[in-house]
Length: 125
Image (cartoon, rainbow, N blue to C red):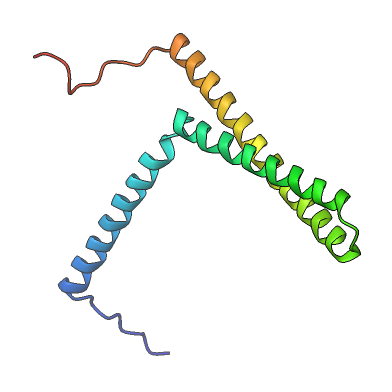
């Protein structure tokens, strides 16, 4: 059986493969840096979650009141469905609000146990 002859790779293709490998490692390093950052529970995010929670609670209450006060069966069914949907959305925002509050308390406790080191930008030389 004749031996198969191996093709030599040109130097251009070798450079391209090295460049692609370097690009992949840079992208991986960037992904690692982003993964190190955790979700911060800023006061603005808590405010947005709280305002949306109140909005959907009011919408659910209004839909429930309209469901009880109307006599047309079509509107009763419509507002009952809307009340259920708005209540579940409000429940979702309540869960988000609880998560943000827990993250905020966990961050405060972590800073108390492990104080942050001063950044290098503000150090005097």
